[in-house]
Length: 79
Image (cartoon, rainbow, N blue to C red; front, side, top):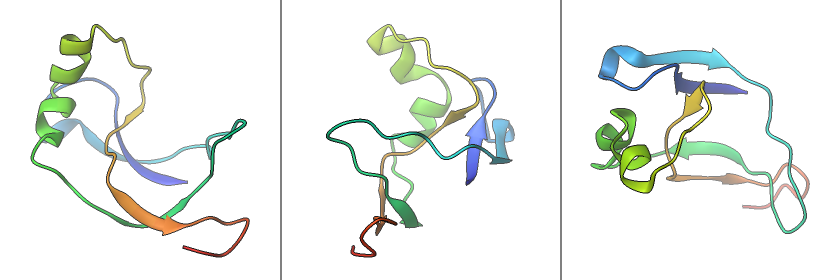
């Protein structure tokens, strides 16, 4: 899949286009082919490591930012 990811926390210079494997899905999950992605006002805070620090998390890099999008399930072809 094509994604914009970061290899470390920091500024906009850390955003890198990447070809990454399609994530696996588990029970109760749905794979969605994102057709439109949004950028929220909170995304710079996440890119700079603010959420990871606040939540005590250590994400794996490359880290794909974002939680806002719309698309289709490749299995059903439906939105």
